[in-house]
Length: 118
Image (tube, rainbow, N blue to C red):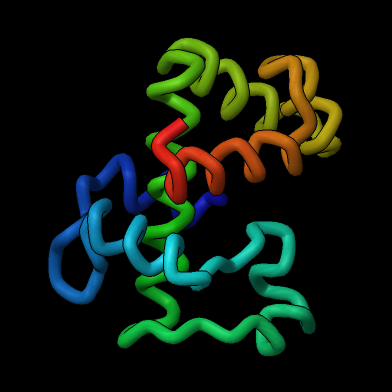
C-alpha cells in the first residue's frame, strides 16, 4: 500500500505509464486485481494481470484503494491510519481500530464499488 500512497500523493495516476483511475477501474472490473497482501510475496507471480505495464498498474490500483478510503472515510481518518502504522506494526489491528472493518472486508467493498458503483 505504500506504493499506492506515493502514487496518490504525487498525483501520478494517469501520468507516464501509470494508468488513470478510470482505466484502472476498467481493468479491475475485467478481473485484473493484485490483492495487496500478495504484493511482493511469492504469490504475486501467480496473479495473472492482463495489463500493459504490470508494476505501474499495481501501483495505480493501490492508489485507487487509497483514494477510495479517503473518499469513503475522510482524509483525517486516513492520516490517523498512516501515523499509527509508523508507530505500530500490526497492520490488521490498526486498520480495524481506525476504520471499524477488517482490511480484507474493505478490499471486498472496494472491489464491489469498482464493479457495481455501490
